[in-house]
Length: 176
Image (cartoon, rainbow, N blue to C red):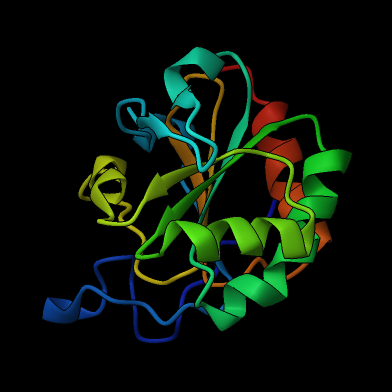
């Protein structure tokens, strides 16, 4: 089982008091099956203008990466996500926030990102992750279980292909 890692002094995502912020350092938070909330309902248009609705992918493990072309850690993790998207049996989707369309498209071209990204310059889609698991850092990566519920959150850049692989494979192996 992948270890639950939190910053020292924090007891959870809400462990930073009124700031409600955790520095994005690639921390992995796994959500036990019995504690998972309702499915995440996210939909929108891709950077290419195609509709995306995560509910269409129920029954599959889905990896959701919140990113922006202006974000240095997003740039450093992009090759890892591209490798993971081809290596893992999971759907991948990005949510591009606070960006300009031209910059977002250039980012995808630069890194060879072939999975779709929802264009969300106002960050409205982020609210749909619920009160327990809003992204506190950019980038943030969610692994949704086959029912569309948040099963894990990586706050900050994905630390390695091995870390993401372990989380996705563990969620994929679940029965419930």
